[in-house]
Image (cartoon, rainbow, N blue to C red; front, side, top):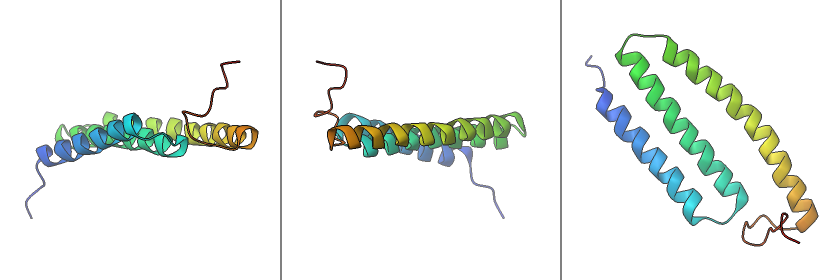
Length: 102
């Protein structure tokens, strides 16, 4: 059974990362922006795994594990902040949230 070439993984990763960047730039909902940031992190993880497999190296897989642990902590803190802002302002649209302005 032939192996999948690394170029396919890198193209998929580039497409996922581009969709994440596009979502962060275009969307104004804080939760959708947060999910797009997570999509970009997963695209980078896919790149690390592809190169780790291509180079027969375990270090990329270990780094992906660390990034996923940090991303899980980010999700917990980020969603808590978004929920707190929603309770305070009753909106999650970033254009309407002006917490740092008086």
